[in-house]
Length: 147
Image (cartoon, rainbow, N blue to C red; front, top):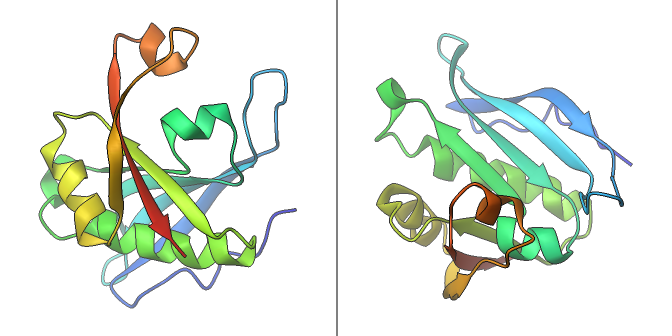
C-alpha cells in the first residue's frame, strides 16, 4: 500500500518519512504518510507535512495535504516545495486531484495554495460532525489541484 519515499527531494528540501497510518474506516481516515520537512544543506527540520491517500467526507473538508513550516523558517516557500514533492507521491497512488484546505484567515496558507497552482473551489461551512468543527473552526477554504 505504501510506496518508497526516498526520492522526495528537490535539492533544497527533502521529506523524511516519520510514520504511516493505515486506513481507519471507523473514524473515516484514509491511509496517510507523515513527513518531516528537512533542509538539504544542514539536515535541519523546518516543518512537517502529510499526504492523505484517497477521497472521502473527511478529506473533502480536511484535505489530502497538511503542512506546517516552523516560525524561523517561514518565507522560503518550504510549504509549497513540500506540496510539490507530495504531488509526486500522490501520482504514484494514481490520484488525479488533491484537495487542500485551510482556514479562511490563514493568509500564508492561502498564498501557498495559489503559488502551487491550486484553484479555490469555495469557502464552505464545516459540518458539525467534523473534527475541525469540534475544535472551533466553522469554515474552510477548499482548494483543488489537478495532477
